[in-house]
Length: 417
Image (spheres, one colour):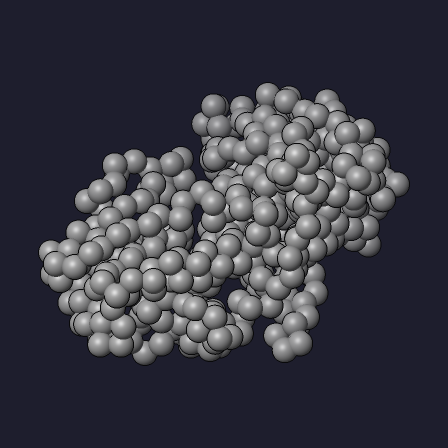
């Protein structure tokens, strides 16, 4: 057992927001308020960028009242703001790179920060890993404990069974697909509706569109995921088979589906721009397929891009997701403050799907950062155009339960920090 560190803590949010990222923030707040060795919990505005600029807010004071904590749980997006800043290598000998880390650890010392919690996805875990490596390199790893707390609607983080935020996004996608399909079914005119869902490298979120097929609800006719190469001729053949059954076809596609040669299907409609981590900005996949289907079949075709509502629809959040998100935030504080964990990420370990049960553990962040967790082969059918029952069994427990945000004048009441 490591010695107890007494001092302040700081928490930040990074990467794309979710409907549950503030529930995780609430968990960190609750954990810090409960822990005697943490005096003040600061929030860094706009992630590590705000940390370096000393843009801090006193969360211990703002959320001393439990009613404010409860309101934050149901607030979508990142209440502290976000960023996509890539830190240099902690092994770099360049003066400008060394200055970045020196600045960060100078701020740690100035504010007597002994605990650093970073809520985010793969790129955020990269930040946690680099800070931990630098601290170890400089022999100051015992002076501050650095913890990663997972989130991502993409659900592509390694080690963890699932990521906070995914369950709510999956619930939104499955529900919205159900509603779209019902809307499309009112006419007898031959038509194809193509719905584009977020997912660059992994198809977890798009896969959630199909869970209704295994519980008696509506689900799309076809589902295409980044884990399988996309073939236009197979797509057309599958559409013809679907038309034999009914005139209104609905297709779910991941934004990141690629042809066998590695080209994104939507590449021709994209700018080619990339973020600081080298990720391309994706959009337009459904539009490309809309044009292809129109040329091949000459029927009515529409494309729908679900876009931001997938990750910010807090009114349709999963109660299970919110509860687990609070729990994992709390667990991160306990792991760092009580168990001496540092350079690690807290994660979910599933014990059972029927009945659903999981526990929270922690692992080295080096086993998580920059790895992608894709759908297992047995979650995708042999044709590569739908999910299996095993996939539905995995997703369904995560979307269970309805959240109940407070309403004021007919609209949800959200927290602003």
